[in-house]
Image 1 (cartoon, rainbow, N blue to C red):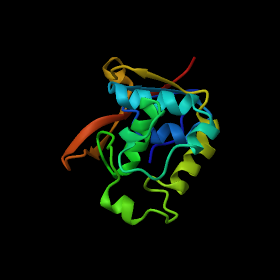
Image 2: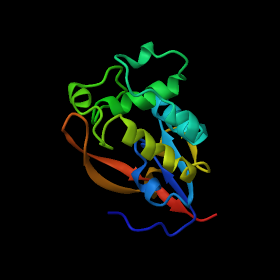
Image 3: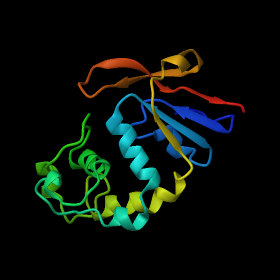
Image 4: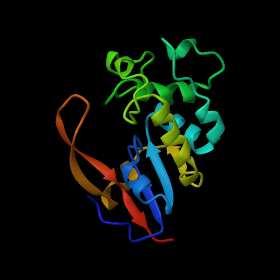
Length: 164
C-alpha cells in the first residue's frame, strides 16, 4: 500500500477506479486517462446528482435500450455489469443476473448504486482530463500489476503528489 500523500494535490493517471485518490479524497485530485470512456465516466460521476444516480435502472436486458440515459451513465453502469472488464458491457453477465436482488456491492444492483450515490459528495472537487501521463513519468512511483489479460506488467499507478 502506498503511503499517505505529503502534499495537497494528487495527480493520478490510469484513472480507472482511482483507488489512491479515493483513499485520500480530501486532497485536490486530478485524474488523467487517455481513454475517453474512462474520462467520461469520471466527469459524469463528478457532476451527477445523488438523485439522478439513484434513478439509474437496475432491471434491463441491454443498457442501450434504456431511453433517456446519458452515454456516460450507460458506460458507468456497463462497467458494473461484468467484473474486471476493460470496456463497458451492454448486458448483465450470467453472474450478475444470478445475483440480482442480493445485497452485493460488487456488481450492478441496488447496493452498488446506493454506495456510489452516497459517496459522490466526496469527489465534487475533483478534476479529470483526457491526457497522457508520460510528461509526469519521471516523478512517479511504479508498482507491478496484472492487466486484464493476466500478463504481468509495470505501470505508473500514482504519478506524484506535488506542492503548490
